[in-house]
Length: 238
Ligand SMILES: *[C@@H]1O[C@H](CO)[C@@H](O)[C@H](O)[C@H]1NC(C)=O
Ligand SMILES: *[C@@H]1O[C@H](CO)[C@@H](O)[C@H](O)[C@H]1NC(C)=O
Ligand SMILES: *[C@@H]1O[C@H](CO)[C@@H](O)[C@H](O)[C@H]1NC(C)=O
Ligand SMILES: *[C@@H]1O[C@H](CO)[C@@H](O)[C@H](O)[C@H]1NC(C)=O
Image 1 (cartoon, rainbow, N blue to C red):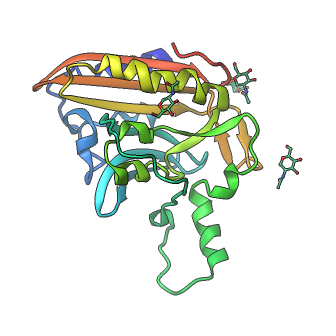
Image 2: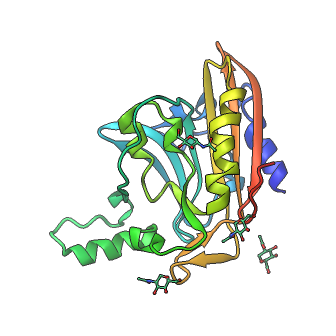
């Protein structure tokens, strides 16, 4: 099932002439090959599509699961660059508060409201053996502001620390670098499969798997596609 989904996501860059796809990421289709997000097979019960915007620019796109408070996937264009890593500071999305309050509110009230639909900083404090794993990693962005934008709590899931710091990071750093040689544009979608465990008193799901699919476009032609998957309690990327 997972492999089928992965194949679908990764092969979809090689299917030309998709029809009748109404783009649901209307403000940020540019992060998907041919403006085409994955089909509804990945849709959770309580989804929200986020065009991740920072300093007046769209940086990447996220499908977020408001019930499990983890992203389903983040989609971005691979553009690693030499800009320094930003200091650690975590963003939330006030746009997920619904209805958006028009009057002044207390800070406590706002944090509670934000926390209803997404993970907040407190949820990730004091974890052992789990990291804040970014689906759209800062190391795959070129400029400083785009790196900063990846530090949003809607782009992370609890990821096995060993995996995050070793095998997954090697995939992100080394495998991606090799695979993308000669690509004009590389579209990436990285996602999390929900698991049966959670953190923060059940508020935030701990994914069972993490996957990533990529599409290499040379000139105008999609030429290569690949995908990997990792079990979130093993230090191994397949
Ligand atoms: C953090 O976790 C440790 C061990 O799991 C526990 O002893 C400690 O009380 C926790 N601290 C807070 C602030 O929750
Ligand atoms: C991956 O790249 C980051 C940032 O450039 C670096 O800190 C890290 O040590 C690298 N890790 C591996 C496993 O190559
Ligand atoms: C989670 O639990 C369900 C029901 O018990 C089971 O079918 C499923 O395989 C479990 N998933 C994982 C990743 O362990
Ligand atoms: C993380 O992965 C390592 C390596 O496989 C494993 O030993 C450890 O138990 C895992 N930790 C968690 C919290 O899943």
